[in-house]
Amino acid sequence: MEKYISVKDFEDAALAALPKTVRDYYKSGATDEYTLAENRRAFQRLRIRPKCLVGIKGCDTSTTILGEKVSMPVGISPTAMQRMAHPDGETATARAAQAERVIYTLSTISTSSIEEVAQAAPNAVKWFQLYIYNDREITKNLVLRAEKAGFKAIALTVDTPLFGLRRADIRNKFTLPKHLTLANFEGHLSNKIHSSGEGSGLSHYVNNLFDPSLTWDEIRWLKSITKLPIIAKGILRGDDAARAARAGCSAVLVSNHGARQLDGVPATIEVLPEIIAAVEQYNVEVYLDGGVTTGTDVYKALALGAKMASILVFVGRPALWGLAVAGQEGVQRMLNIIRKELEYTLQIAGTQTVPEITKDMVRHESTYSR
Ligand code: FNR
Image (cartoon, rainbow, N blue to C red; front, side):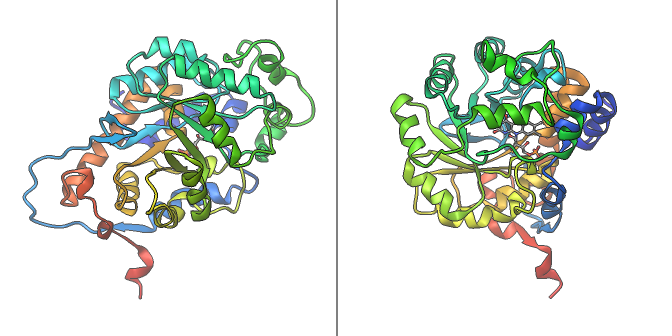
């Protein structure tokens, strides 16, 4: 493991090791992948402004999210079908999150079931990512199972009325390998993904079974069936963030789905200030994912979100890369790389704790060239 000293090292090794169809599925963004590149570039356009001689005596990365203490403000975003990366799949990623005391989010379309993940990592802070199926009984059943299995929140994905166009998946006719199943389901809901046709099999699955006609009323429905806090995942506009808050969500996750849904949308870090301003008057937490690969990225997001009492940054693909390289150990190593980079950033920037990271710690590069 010592040879992996950056998330990029894991990415390179994973991309070299994975079969083409899996590699393409994990790494792709929508159509021209302009936003995919922007998710990274937008972080690079922000500059950290360190404070000198402040008397650093160590640092503390811990924070509290939806009432749960976590070891650092970094969590794992839901990514589908993790057993394509490693035979232990989601159970390994959840165990890594448990060992590192960070939040783990399980996808609805996972290759390990809600119950398997709960059993593998009983003490992890686990959230369940929900897609709403046309059949509300199926949807309700998923939520109740997650609640019963000890999951602590429902992250409702709000950015997927249709499945984004990913060209590599269309070319590869991507489907789940035959030896794996969508483990939260039985019968056609589990197997339909294997049926081949033109283009991406996953795209057919999503477009046939997920309900595209969702409105904000769905939050009220969800709240009528569960006591778990609801997070709106996939928000890119201030007015939508305010709608989510008014509809009763406990948090919004600023996300463009890893740039996989619609190309040409902004990088997530670009819209974070708009979202923070829009929900100032509401009691909601704000999180962000998309393009985060270093501790300095995490720091920049924390600075832009500094007004919020609780801000959290999530990683999607980096967990897949760690998982593909070395299962649970690889995910833990990936998390510890980000942790160490964050600890160094905190101290060299002259801030010892997360609340000390104020907005003035970061500036856009354009303010230096005037
Ligand atoms: C995802 N994402 C995702 N989101 C979701 O709500 N449900 C899902 O099942 C999936 N599946 C999924 C698979 C793969 C392979 C990727 C890369 C992404 C989106 C994910 O939760 C997250 O928003 C992004 O991955 C964050 O961007 P980065 O960290 O991958 O750049």
